[in-house]
Every structure is written in C-alpha cells, then in structure tokens.
Image 1 (tube, rainbow, N blue to C red):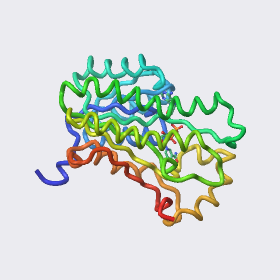
Image 2 (cartoon, rainbow, N blue to C red):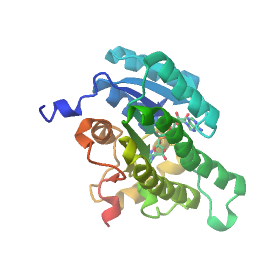
Image 3 (spheres, rainbow, N blue to C red):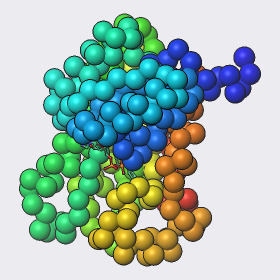
Image 4 (cartoon, protein in one colour):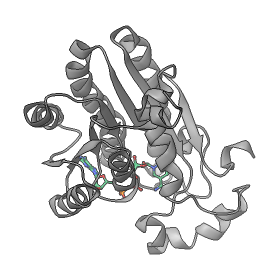
Length: 256
Ligand code: NAI
C-alpha cells in the first residue's frame, strides 16, 4: 500500500470530545476529510450540531452526544450511542479541556478541582469507555490532547492546575499505552503550543500575545490547521508502531 493510502481513514469511526469548537472541531473535520465518520461529544448542543452538519457536508456520517466528560455515565453513553449506530469505534480524540489563571498561593480549591476534573479525570473516563469497546476488537487509536504546558511552565500567566493537569495527561497516556498495548490499542498524545482560537481574541489573553510571540522561535501562533496532520497520522495505520508518545507542536516554544 502506498504511504498516502496508509493515512486514509475510510470506513473508520471516530469520537471527538469537545468537538463543538476550536481545536476539537478542526480535528473532527480533519478526520472526516481523511474518510472517517465522526461523532461529537460536547456540552454545547448548538455548536456540536453545527460541526456535525459540517461533517455531513464533507460526505461522512456524524452523530452528536451532549454530555460532560467528567461524568462516567455520559462517556459510556456516548460510546454506546456510536456502537448502537455504527457498530464500532476505531478512533477517539479526547480533547475537551478548560483552563483558568490564579496565583498558586490564592488558588480557589473549586477552581483547581474544575480544571483537574475536566482535563485529567475527563480524559481518563473517556479513554476507559472507549477502550472497553476497543479491547474485544483488539485494535483502536486513542489520542489525548495534552499541551506544551505539560512540559514547560508558561509565563507570565500563572496556571498551576492547568500545567499539572496536562503533565498528568502525558503520563496517563503512557500508562494507558503500556496497559492496552496487548489489546492492540495505541494511545498517544498531542501537546500543542499557543494556538489561535477564539480564546486568544478575548481581552485578558489578547494583551499577552506579543509577549508570547517573543518566546516562539517560529515567531507566530499556531493555527488549528497546524494540528490536523498529526491527528490524522495518529488516527491512521501509518502510526501503528507508535504508542505512549507525546508529539509537541509549538513552533519551537519548548526548545528555548
Ligand atoms: P475551546 O474552549 O475552544 O473548546 C473546548 C470545547 O470543549 C468546547 O466546545 C466546550 O464546550 C467543550 N467542553 C468543555 N468542557 C467540557 C466537558 N466537561 N464535557 C464535554 N465538553 C466540554 O478549547 P480549545 O482551545 O479548542 O482547546 C481544546 C483542547 O486543546 C483543550 O484540551 C486545551 O487544553 C488544549 N490546548 C489548547 C491550546 C490553545 O492554544 N487553544 C493549547 C494547548 C492545548
């Protein structure tokens, strides 16, 4: 088979959490363009439905599950919906995530908890639900969205919960990869740097961008499209010998 054919996802089914906007939407559309049917799990019904429509316009099937990744019942139900409708789940991108900024000494406990719950527990609960249906098939690709913040400490903003949660995602990925290799399930993560999403245009963030740009060797923010290639690679059989890896896509931020 030619190398480009090994990147194709025709006949595959996928789940993308937090796929209603931003990076999740971009990765969901990338999987669909590569040939997969893609289900979206998100809290926001309106945006999730819009992305599902975009997937249909690409010519693939799509489903929407409105649910919370921090609730195991929701994760299980999302996967069950896919199995009931499509019969199998080949690919899962655990992308839903949140952040907040507080100085460590004044971090409100409930704000810390929120970030860890969504970013770390949410990834685990989704991966668990996904693996339970992948294990009997002896194959599957799980892709967790971590962050360069799992490798470095961002500045000037203080975000210990986010940084700790993303470092957790990277090591959770390795742990699951080790446990599930015997079932043919590959588990890898992607660590994006600063990506230009609507969040970047919000007031508190906007004023920090010039400072961030000085710390990025490539001299620009990442685009969502900069992450699409790696997602398709990790979802496809071209990456069959890769598991437990974390791929940093950050314009070189972490090398300085
Ligand atoms: P976003 O805020 O634009 O989109 C997140 C999506 O997840 C939304 O549709 C939201 O409704 C959904 N969501 C949030 N909590 C949820 C929950 N509990 N259950 C189900 N869905 C939920 O975020 P963005 O920027 O697209 O980020 C996506 C992922 O990429 C996150 O894990 C984030 O930490 C990570 N990331 C983002 C970077 C950036 O520069 N934007 C950089 C590095 C990592």
